[in-house]
Image 1 (cartoon, rainbow, N blue to C red):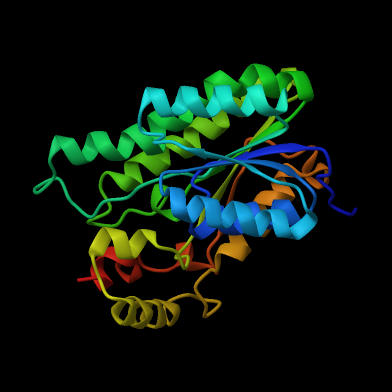
Image 2: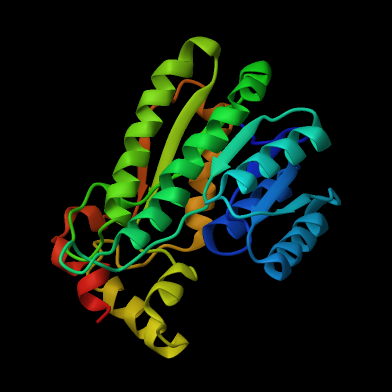
Length: 267
């Protein structure tokens, strides 16, 4: 079955870089009308411009902090005011932190959970009525950190585990309403989040990616486009009977020892 999102309205959060950028570009190629959300205005405008080049459809760019109620409300209102409908919600925005219980402070916990859990919960709540109206669906972007236990991934791993269960709970609740809810669980993926979290240089980051690739059964780290393809598949009619699933895209990394993962190697 061919995938076509012509005249479908798709909201992608965290669209200014990484997985969100790749996802926005793929939906644009498939004809979607896009609402793109990010905190970095310059990057977001650049991504929106690239999306417009794909099929000539100009996205709505919303600069907002999804860790705040104001940012969530702005995103929902501007999207629905502009398009009058919503077919797909991609909850991709997220932040991370490197810490453990002996070093953690509550400010870091609150910051991570405000975006990765509370922000998703609140935005989804506001947009569910529109999704019920269109028979739309939701794709949440989680992480294998939600199912693998790695020292140093607190509270990010906790937040992603919560997101996985949120996916299952809301999928069950909304199934009778005709709304599907799924999640994608990326492994190590080329993006800006690790560099922001660790403060490493580009050379250090590339060296780390090469090192991690040797621990992945399929021998490669993920690209943003790998995750985007799965997001689009789950959002499409090809997955019309798929709901409540958390789909790993990780090259098999989840089957390896947790000591091979991010935090230990990124010292």
